[in-house]
Length: 145
Figure 1 (tube, rainbow, N blue to C red):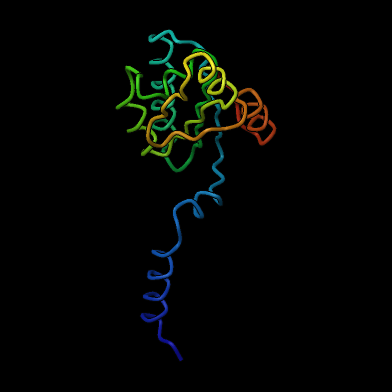
Figure 2 (figure 1 turned 180 degrees about the vertical axis):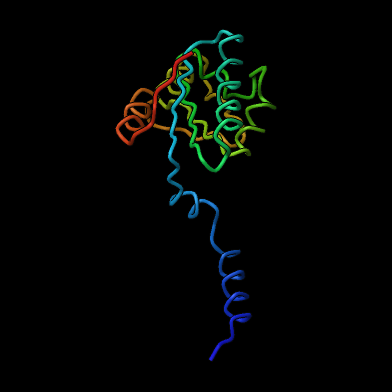
């Protein structure tokens, strides 16, 4: 028979081996928010980031899922050229999800001849508007500053 201390040790070792993404897949907080950014206005982009931070402060990181979806001119917020690059990368490490519209990226690539370089921690989705719709269907509240 395995003692309680041994069971606890086995649990800790196994828990350490589980990828964080697997744990996140089971993450189902009471509050879920999707925030749209579709403008290149620096003031509005700052408001979007502030909204996300304020939601985490109010509800607690473990009680709210936040995803910021960028498309059109708002995609610039999630690229290496962003004036908010350091802040976006920091917030991505703080359990805020950032999604970049693949359609917008393709259009920008056609226009400039090269694909935009996304910041660390930013995911690409096929279409920003579709992503917002899917998140709303999954119970996310929608915010557009």
